[in-house]
Length: 306
Image 1 (cartoon, rainbow, N blue to C red):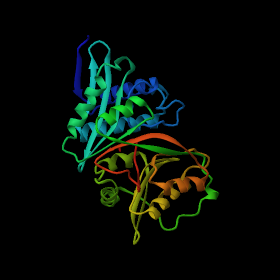
Image 2 (image 1 turned 135 degrees about the horizontal axis):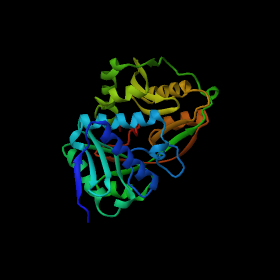
Image 3 (image 1 turned 45 degrees about the vertical axis):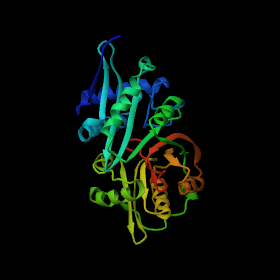
Image 4 (image 1 turned 180 degrees about the horizontal axis):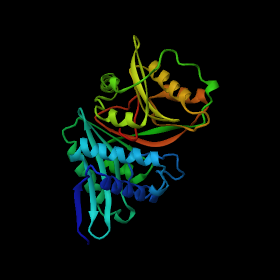
């Protein structure tokens, strides 16, 4: 057997490209273990092959990889085969006692050889001191089994998708403001209340690629990241404010652009109500896998940076 090398992911363009290639090969085959990118709207699950990705998606992917390589060098790993090159990757992060796994991917040729289990164990070692764990998984048996064996509770999620009909939505019941980096303390406070720990430096990366909506009044506070019709993340201190934010994001989407709101747990019925009002489809969207925490009723988990 060709010797394997396990090494950290470096914060450079070359390693970001390698991570992208491994993930594209893994996702395209459907036999790999992709965690953190959901169905991406592609028939059969997973994002399209890397060569088909639009430039803005590639920029987000590369930016996320380099961001985590900077902030969490001990949690980001590549497995390389001396003959075949990179065959597996894991990206993980620690944020205030919460460990998350944005990406775990193994190319088809390396499946069934223990590479994925070894890589997951190394990534989990990085989060050994964390009380809480979070990972997003597609509707793939291998992914779900692996995370369940690792001690995670598995919670099915929904995706809200399709063209939204703005005429069917009631206007937001209060003010929604354009957010900026100045709102980071507010967002970290909301994160601590809704998911147990702040995203911290992740907000800088999310702000680079997404529009930020913020609410902050006597009723509480919350935020939502969106890009066109895709809602990347949302968190609020009440159902009313969460509904206001999601409604504002849908109303701001370009006319005719399909909506994508993923990782909606059963507890977040407020989001389902907005989807019904907007005429969206409600379909399965894989799983959110949690350890030491309950499903987030008032937060929609980001695939990019959980």
